[in-house]
Image (tube, rainbow, N blue to C red; front, top):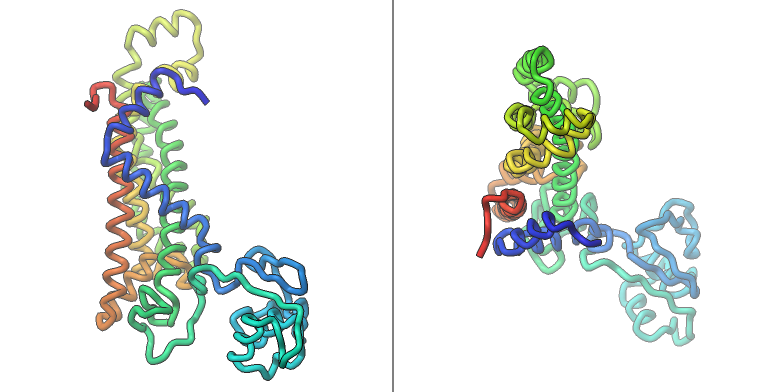
Length: 369
């Protein structure tokens, strides 16, 4: 797709901003890896070969009976009996087989000297999901070791797996909320500033009343009535966050509504909607983009704060705020605090650098050597 001359200039300006461009690449790689979290950290194998057939447990439910077992419940792939059934082709003797026998079957393809229809399991790099309770030695939280590179939390869940899933959850939540609040705020500010008069006056009174509502208290009250899932929390954040951009967009439209090109467009019979969103809005984008880093990082911080206080997502969710709470309650496990702080610092810094570069690229007064 060929870019317009204006957008091509903006892209060149963004690329010349080295800090923003490198941050975009780093953030893109990290977020891309988090989108593939099921392939990186999972208690289920990515691929299973059993009697010549391939299965993908991370996408589909397979009962134990599908691999020669006795139960119709989902196969516990980490259990030694299920692994033995898969690698040996469903031999019944697997129910009494020790770990060494399974290793022998995987290495030689034989069972007690006889050849078997060998199967195999392809595990992700981290064989734990965000909610997998690990069998560890000693008390939880346990320090980093060869099995858990960042240790475990106070319920013996792998911290690295929770960080990968939590990164995706936090960024996805922030981007969805920011997009929705921006659309509502820009539309409301455009209508206020473009039409002015009683429309502007009434909107301002509504925003003053709505903006004075203690949103945190409302969310806490709602959480006491209904369980807060992902989309319920998104709706609440959008409900109280859409006013953030209204004043900025309103000021830009009030300034531009009497420009010569706007008057000329009106004289030619161009509709108000076309003038607002095709001609005036692009000039208001620089001021709007200035606030986007604050919206994104503020949303991530709000989600973490709600989870830290216990009024956000369920405790089973891979929340970075819940990890921060565990760090506070387990001062004897400094790796929890270090991991939470490092994750927030890297994530928020990269987002701020990227959005600063986008803002400068849209500013016609900014040029880069």
